[in-house]
Each structure stands twice: as structure tokens, then as C-alpha cells.
Amino acid sequence: QVQLVESGGGLVQAGGSLRLSCAASGRTFNNYAMGWFRQAPGKEREFVAAISWSGSITSYADSVKGQFTISRDNAKNTLYLQMNSLKPEDTAVYYCAAGKFIAVFRTPALTGVNYWGQGTQVTVSS
Image 1 (cartoon, helix red, strand yellow):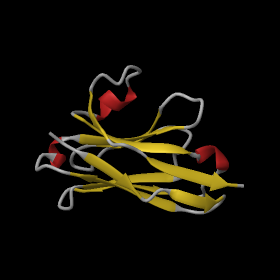
Image 2: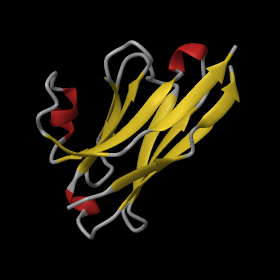
Image 3: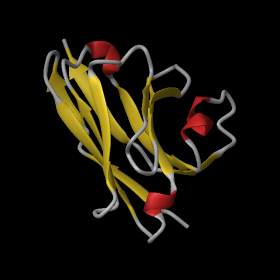
């Protein structure tokens, strides 16, 4: 069992930066690939980024490539998302998720995602 708790969201001006964290409980954190998703009001949840259990492989949505960086610290059971040059369209609730492989985060039904966090709000003002 893995419990995920996001933090680090908030209100930021366009062009600013935020770093989201996702703290995982349990001793099996490094057995899972991890991902970030976001959901804006009135829109479906969308994939943002994912990272393999070792951290050696990362994957990004085209919309955030070069702007966001995903990383993890397995010693601290923590996942991160560094978000730079934020835009109003980045406003959303951001969720972290755990799954066995990076590939599960890119499947439409997301049936391979084992655990979800409760989300943290990111609001970017113009």
C-alpha cells in the first residue's frame, strides 16, 4: 500500500516558478514508477510527466517539455515537479500517481495506475 500526499501548490504570477512535492508512505516507493497529472476546471485529467523507479527514464507531455522537470529522491520517498515559466493555462489541480511502469501513465484509461494523491491547487495569475 502506498499513500501519496502532494504539497507545494499555490498562487503565482505568470513567469514564476513552483516546486511540487509528493510524499509517499510505505517502504515500496522505489518499486513504482511515478507520474504527475493535472486537471483544469471543466477539463479532463491530463498527463504531465512520469519517471521510472530508478529515475533514469523520464517522459513529458509535449505541452510542458522544457518547462517542467520531474525528479525523485527514493531515500526520502518523495517525488518532485519543478515548474518554471508558469502560464495561466498551467492553472489546475495537480495530482501525483504511482504505477508499475511509465507506460501506464500514457494509457487513456489509466487502469494501470495503482495509487493517486489527493491533489494540490496551482493557480497562475496573468
